[in-house]
Image 1: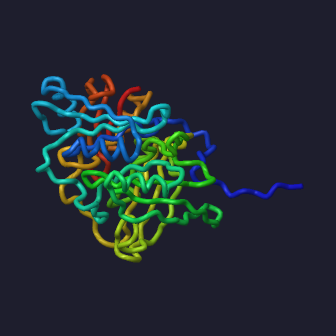
Image 2: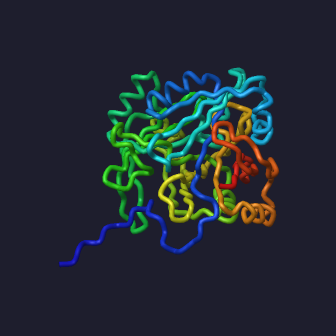
Image 3: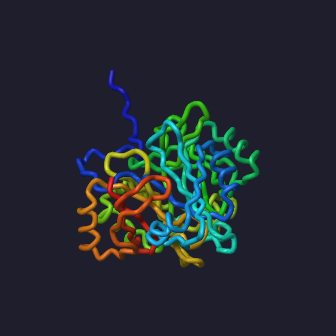
Length: 336
């Protein structure tokens, strides 16, 4: 008896033999005004392990210059990890003065730049109740979203969009019977951060950067329409959004979601990077640093910080350079 065919999960890696150049996204750096509040959200509501460090000006000035962080007499840094899940993204949060604006005021999804980071969850309703018990809200409640497969069928996932400190969006994603977007700790029913998202002004131009410079593969692409103010992005109803997922070849997590609004202009009201509060830097490891640097030169990519050896503030010393995406968002490439 022939087994019925099962539609391919769009998250499944390709089998085209493409060689990995840059590895999956490894770190995200945020800037925040209140590290205690961040610890309550990420360490309490999301059950991540936290560690608070303090660096003096002399110890931190190299990294601050390299990453575009305003130098301070003492730089406080909160590190977030998911113990037992090495594939989970590491998060570094640097403290900035509360007077600095957020890069995405009120989580305005008509502005370009980084949007947030997502976490895999089992029993999303239970986790949402925990998040609310810690005093945090969501842009929308727990909803069921339908996504397309390449063969024309669809599948449903559970999702909500929590509002983290400093106007950062943190989707919780429950893919039910499908492969989760990252490993989940069964003891707590939640994993560590597994992907990051951004809104861009020209998705084809940004996609070329991920493809040609980072060596990432486009795993999935489609266009959807916003549900309106009650949806997670709170866009006007019917706003068409082009959506892409980019992965390091062969990987299942540590990926990027980029979206472009197909109606209405994008703007970055307070600029991109770590001089304002919010998500300000993506960091990608590579074992082929010289090859990436060659691609950067050949494709005319803007270099924000030339290759240098820096103290990576909690994650050891590294050889690193910082590039700009076509929209100007900072991307660190470091030797692993």
